[in-house]
Length: 446
Image (cartoon, rainbow, N blue to C red; front, side, top):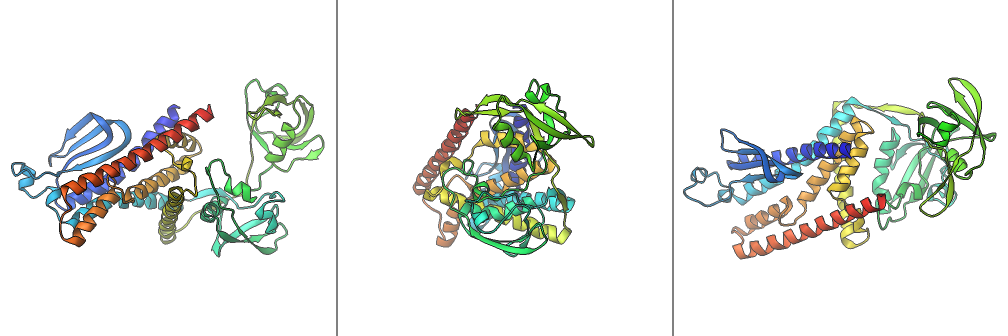
């Protein structure tokens, strides 16, 4: 819980500061005085006023932040006298100031992805496991050991890259073509169309349903659970499971299925321990799942050594790939949002701060690079959300001032009040749905 909270605060702080810095910088460039730059909402905890008269504040609720430009028509205000009120600026200047926040959010995503591509990440090679017979992957001719080398003509270097490229077609129900090298070194192609995902994407495993899974390595025990069957029968961390009752174990999934089928029944495991093969009889404990089915449980966390490669690029390629990844992430997110609006996809997919905090805590424990990619994803999402033409968001303000620029006159105060009221009502509805989804996920989790 504490890790999730700390990771969430770090994530939001980085994302918000970068977004609001865009507003602040362009406001200053366009001669607008910024009254306050706040990280967080609510009561101010810490603050100081700089020599330019801007208050820099840390506020109580770490759920966002804001920049407050001078927006008054008070002839006695010293900054208004100097022409530093945003209300005195042209519609074009206002659009630029409001657009700067989302632009900087996308820029942060590009910067993070650029650094990741430059530094390099060790990732598993895209070698596929055996798809189940009814799956579209199996029907398209994909078999265990097939290695993905390209998707729709674009080269693939790793499994995470393959998932990223398949995410769009998978969530939108589109056709895709994989170029593969089978276990015998022969090239082949597989073309198939993903079924259209409906409902909650968390509940609907788009890749698993399609039969696309990474080939799992031989199961290795990486952690023994205290007071478990694995501990009682002297299994050790680092043990490599080779066989169960004389049957070769190909991967972790096969071992898990074998254990589940054998509650309170003895299984003879053949284990590689430090280069020596030993036999260990174990009796999995009986465990009742939520469905009421009784299964066997060993009490060991499994891992393995995936064939991997270092994915790294030069400066030019890193810039191009970082920009493309940011664009693709934003495009897919926008399409998914559109499907939620039209009802094709459940609003259960809308997440709020509680879910973001949970994901932050989970991702930060998987490594620094993964955490940075998560921050990039959140930053891109914040940028995209703020571009929506909803009054109260940057996109709504941009739309209003664009209309003013085209019409050559300001919109009436009465009209603006009505529009802003509707905008805030929509935002409150969105926030309510997101919080509701978060609470329901927590209830189901516990």
